[in-house]
Length: 110
Image 1: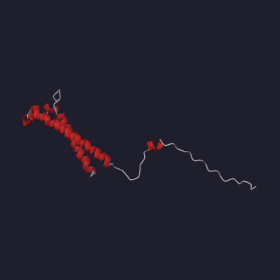
Image 2: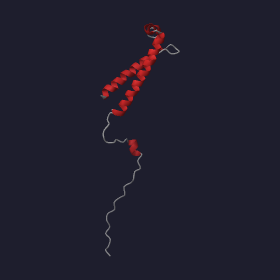
Image 3: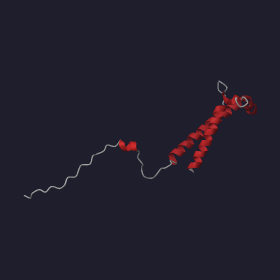
Image 4: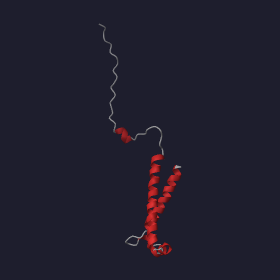
């Protein structure tokens, strides 16, 4: 299940990158690089293309955020039932030095 969610989030991230790069910015974006924005605009119409890309960006970003939270909360790799502490956490603990044990002293009985 963990591998499936990570693979799905990777695919969504790649689609998100592509859709963001296809959106026209003030400089024209990469939409003009792949045959011009006119090709996408002729399929959906200019206004519908911008709406579709904007909605797709929001949906993909939201889905990616939810998947990231699910993976982080429920499927941590290497998670065990015992609490694991890092070296930094261990060094932050105040250490109490062990008191040396003294040999028993023979006291005279009174």
